[in-house]
Image (cartoon, rainbow over all chains, first blue to last red):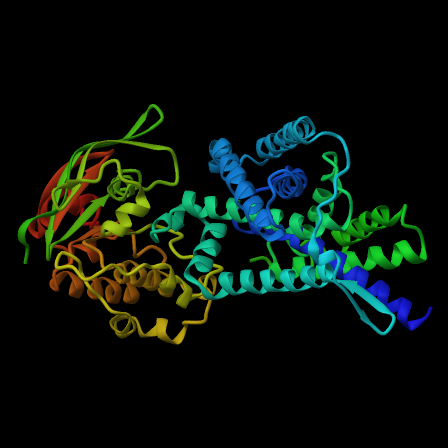
Length: 288
Length: 245
């Protein structure tokens, strides 16, 4: 294998992997802090991509404002979901939450199909047109943005969790929500913030990653599955773990697709997950 | 020495868990500089009472009756808001976070603006009161001994500048010497004006520091009075082990 080809595969894998990690950050926080799952995560990614596309194509928004509005819309949607599941969240009824979020996922997919149609669409990101070349290795401005934004978001989340009052409050909530009340923490407000972050972060991820390929209202399943794999392999609730897991999966898929078969790349990821779950059930990262 | 009007009052407070009534029509006033000991056997309703004052419960408790702080009703106020209003509860059992460091426990507490009705303790004073915590700032709550955890929970409650302090069984699992030291520390805070409600099964230790005693039996107040009620046969027999022959 030529070095330039190897480096190109490595770079492609890095961009894809950091993209997966960016999609997963919201769920990592939701699972790590609130011990909750959201199987509508992938559909929210799809919805955010279409909101961005709709704002740009139909409403004349520029790329960045469209992403910001999409973040706001998804944050509000997640807060609405939090209120819908308030009783189940309070009792940590994970089975009901799983079923409710799956139901929401199907409703959102149907609604998106009705509203946005079944035709594939493209988000016209101006960053795609920027092309950078180092030797024989190429990347777009969008690729570079995904790398930088993901690293910045992860560093910011890690700093907030480790160094701020809100981070300490989130770790307290993750451990014992009832006791947290005796320290003046409002669990419902904090949970609202976590849900809003999940929505906004998945919308940001969609705004940056979805322009790389045509978008369809049926997409989202692969994203939710990959997110779940990243969260589990990374060590449930581990922020650095999710970053490393996303990166590892992206690079693995890149090399596996190029050297073995792209058709079996996801199967190989799941085989790896199974090996991981047997060998190291807690993942390789430490929880929050 | 007690002064002025009641800081915290409750009238006819009852608590139900489903069909079962755990506390019946409890009424009490707490004043500045006063330490009230709530005594009783297991299941007498002591923790239920103190939790009801803080609006807090691990179960599904239904509380009725009136609870007020400085004359204002707080009966329908959520526990985190009561805490911020100055009702600090150090609960029984797990009262610190095992995966949060000592310094982050302090970071959790939002220190309110100075006010006359609040009992102000600075972080420096906290470390003077509990020097062990200063040495263990970077330790996680789960790495502390039982006594250190009680000190940490108490320190956090004090850092919030409480108007009243509610202590639920602080002596559980602690060596007698540490219990004495802890209760004496609390007594010194009371002497500086902080009203304290102390729920305690260790009646002997409690009676040395409290000003007033309330005795609960099966969810009902059966006795209330000054420290002299320690001579009452119900307390002598059941809690001080001095059964008359």
